[in-house]
Length: 365
Image: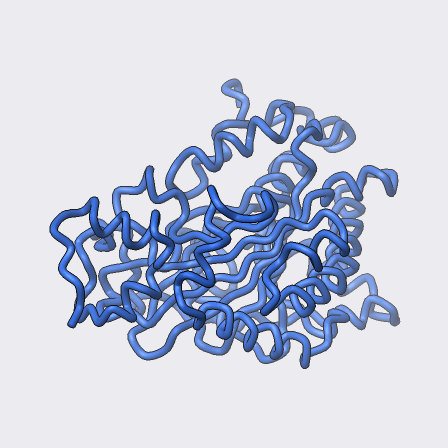
């Protein structure tokens, strides 16, 4: 029999403070979504009205052949128009991707007390955090998601402090993906017509974080969201989806896949990785590249996992439009700031589309 929560506080304590998460809520036997998870009508995801689109994947192996320039154009065009694209032959073994999805399911299948040891105030490492939703204290409606977040400093620290169930495979995924990310950042900066030193490129992806997200099967998926509307904070995000789907992206300008304002579903492609532009790259490019607004729906039939790698400048890094791009454009659309200031603003509020970018916009533009 499902527990009865006398009020919102007792449910909040159970899910958030006690570390049971949404998984614990579902395992308790609930038959309908609690009020605290019911989204306002305008935030709900209508699967019927979404456009399911299999973005043709970009084959990164062709960067080493006669079609190099064409592939570069495909990457830059996707970053300019949608801010999302899928890649294959990316250098990360498909067996590793499958193993990672299995490990994510195994981690979240553990009893709550095994996961709760990584909750914010008790975690043995400041680089490992288990939680639920995004910023539950600030949200009008909670998101139907649990996660474990692991910040990378070096291999030894990861192997010492990341959860035993997934540390080795998560670390291998991160290390193999970063080579691809660096190449993509090089390509995208080159297409802006700027020359950037290697050390500067490294600085743009200096902070690396891998999350494992878990979206339990939901009794009323039409009332909830797995993740609300938002853009990512960093430079580039690498995302491993499972085969269930549920990632929706908002179209900012008319493209073949949809019209401006449409929400299109990024259908999973076996063996592919999803790449998306973050706010930092939009700012560096002076708005040329788009940090796409996206969200995640829930499903009633199966629990879903996704594993993103976020590449972000270090918090002490100064960020602003690249001077050579401003010279070409004739105007700076964003101000310069220290990234820590942006991070503080980003994590202080509930998800709300791309409003996080307002922090950096110049009023005069």
